[in-house]
Length: 226
Image 1: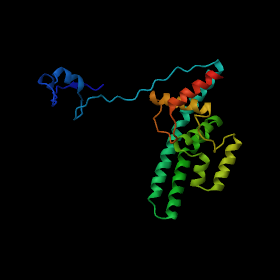
Image 2: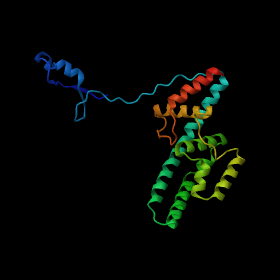
Image 3: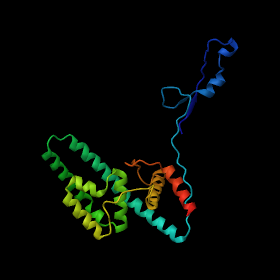
Image 4: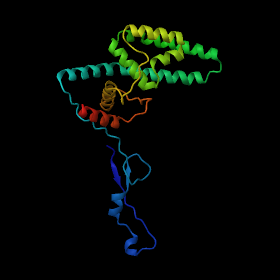
C-alpha cells in the first residue's frame, strides 16, 4: 500500500470574518493528501476496483461436477482465444499498412502458416467440448465467429469445409457467445472473471458489450423463478 504523506495547507476566503478566513492545519490535513511518488496534491485517494463474488450455489452434486468440468475446460482454452485475438489485431494492423492486395494476401498466408504450424498440434488435442468452448471464447475476444474469421482470412469455400469438418465432431464454428441469453455462456464468463481476479488468467477485454454485474442479477433472478 502506498504511504500517505499528510500536508498542511491554509485557505483564504473573501467576504467572511477573519475568524473564518483561515482553515486550521488540522482541517487541511484531513482534506489533502499526497501519495508517495506523486508530484501533486489531491483531495481524494484513487483506489483500484474491487470485485466481490457471491458464493456459487448448486442444487446437486452433479451440478457441482458440471461446473467444475466447465471451469477446467474454460481455463484450459482461454489462452488460445486470447492469442487468437492478439494475432488478429496484429494481422489487421499490418495489413492496413500494406499498399497492394498481393502483399496483403502474401502476408495473410504467412501469418496463417505460422499459426497453423505453431498451434495446430496442440489444438488437435482438445476434446470436442473444449473445442466448442474455444469457439465461444474466440467470439468473446474478437466479436466474430470462427467461421467468419476463416471466411475473411481464407475464402468462403475454405470456411465451408472448416465448418463441415467441425460439424463431424459436433462443433459449430458459427456459434457465438451470449452470456445474457445462454446460461452456460454466463457461467463461462463467471469463471473467467474469477480467474482474472485470482491471477490464474491474464485479463483481456472482451470485444462484446455487456455488464457482468447485470448478468449476475439477471441469472440470479431467473434461477429463483425456476
